[in-house]
Length: 348
Ligand SMILES: Nc1ncnc2c1ncn2[C@@H]1O[C@H](COP(=O)(O)OP(=O)(O)OP(=O)(O)O)[C@@H](O)[C@H]1O
Ligand SMILES: [Mg+2]
Image 1 (cartoon, rainbow, N blue to C red):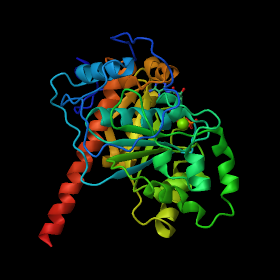
Image 2 (image 1 turned 135 degrees about the vertical axis):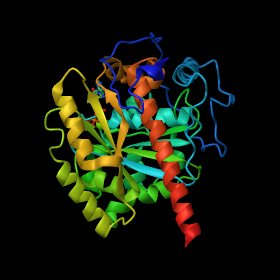
Image 3 (image 1 turned 180 degrees about the horizontal axis):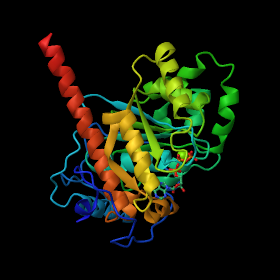
């Protein structure tokens, strides 16, 4: 059982990756899909709600849930109100996109209505979800620069019910310059999100590796920041600058913003360094660091090449189990916080 091989709440790390199951080859794209409004009701595979079994990706998704949560005992409760995460770290290649894609898929597979906004001109989150993002595809650029509604842009992700992606095309590379003279340029993404008419439980915004205007837009639109930290040399380099920027945005543009979640990625238990980075990060950031740690795993890095998350590409792998646990923690921590908030209000 995948979950028993993972690190778990008791704090043991995963071994380097060895796949337990073999994925099937599947198409890498989902072609030009038109945007559909998000269903008003939760669609949960666990609850056996309908899914188009004919799609190979849908079969992969069903298999993923069976493998990752065989008893169906794990729940990822829907939040009482929408949670918007900016997944940010200006350091490149730390796992922002991989974490965005896999957490979004894990939450969607367990009954949450989720949207991924690809805010990186590289378009890696769109690729990882198998969503069309060639030149001319309506994308986050049209939303930011031209004010197009997200209803016209959000694309359902093949095989994963209740998961939507706002893709990024190469046009986004010019957006930072084009937005310079636009009024309230820092609030464009927040405004775009407000144009979406469907109901959502989570929005994950995949930021580019910079602290430019695109990342600022994500930090203005979000309430929570999720920072992936790679368990490698220079892991904490530049983090101070990111935290200072977050404080500035909090002070001037978005008072609700907070760093709620840190996720350790690419942990290689064979190295002492990974352990040192973990100790340092946990020592410094304490409870906002998720217990789940993502191992360095070849399977995780292969999945985007198939337009899939690790959750569907190889649900039996430790990479999938770790993202599954991380998603569960995010959901449960959110539920705990909202209970605490309600109790405090009730007590006043
Ligand atoms: N747990 C992992 N094990 C092995 N490889 C990984 C893991 N997570 C991510 N990778 C790989 O590392 C590379 C960087 O990951 P990713 O693209 O998620 O980082 P990023 O922070 O989004 O990068 P960028 O700053 O360029 O946007 C990718 O090739 C990805 O497939
Ligand atoms: Mg990325």
